[in-house]
Image (tube, helix red, strand yellow):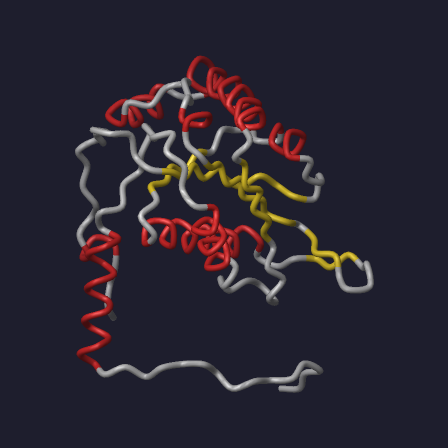
Length: 222
């Protein structure tokens, strides 16, 4: 393989089998407590926590290392209000006209509806965009490869990083989401991927009693 870019030594710490097992088990036990929260406290959280979580998301692998993501972090009440109004307009259309009965029945146990008050209550909304193109150092337009897959991986890392820091989250995907480009002044070459709501849970909040599939139903070893 030939390349014009220099290579550097990999920073990697080789762990013993027991250390790997301990770390993997500890991380799983921590992540298994992660739950989607729909009732948030207005208590602020340090912006540096959000910044570090975003830095973690930015370490995600991506097609050709184009890093096809942009994270718009919203804490201004007026902008959160605009996002809520836009999202609720789309959600009313969804619940009243777009969703099939099958879809609504699947959502019923989770207690969701068109009211998205959490978009104003939580201290942070992180609007994640998938970028179709990247602008190079000389201003040229470079195609991004596997942007949806790359942004999905980065989003997963972001959720894990926030949970690790003690921040609760909610993934919200009103459809369509083009209204977010206008509110946040993002170019048409960026596609809204998700609104990630971040903050502390409201006092006494309850979540649906659900379970996750066991390992033998989600993985196979050949």
